[in-house]
Length: 270
Image (cartoon, rainbow, N blue to C red; front, side, top):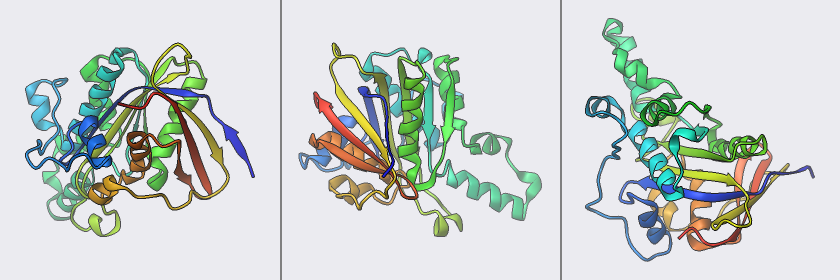
């Protein structure tokens, strides 16, 4: 069995947002059974990184990615303008894709330049780098069910290549129209991690990961899955629940017959 060891990483900061769980603290409390999703929580993510006009034009998927990215950087006390970033999304914005397909089929001359601008897979990465003034590399990645694991791998490789820290943002929104029948996704779910090279003097959870040539086993599905399983980024919940519950490891689906085993040590993500 092929095994590929990856560099040891440290979770320097974490941010999360989902319907009824507008922060990592709220999501962690739901995962632990200490709370239920908040009925009065904001229904739409928000960020102060964009001017008011840009905020109004930006789709929820972009606002989601920016909110969790900003939260993770604040948690890590990291300057977002200096961090290379990896933006992972299984689908991009399927609501906009459905709108554009419908418009092209019915009234093609009415296609919206703004909608087209927001339809590209790296839209969130573009808004982020402009909003924080970041000139470091930004990567947009998609790998179906393995999207989150492949985002982790990309971040790990950038750390191995010399980056002191990398921002990983993984998020997806709802699908609609005919696309919902083949690419189902409901609600909003986003998570961001500032991953840093291991430093024995620093606090935080350490991740030791191995890439194995075997399919990921069926994962244990806790409370977060009960609320968020319908979202395309649900595979990330495997790691979020492990972090919230202080479990020693988790196994992520990294592709056909490939799994990413992540072992945790150090202080919990409180």
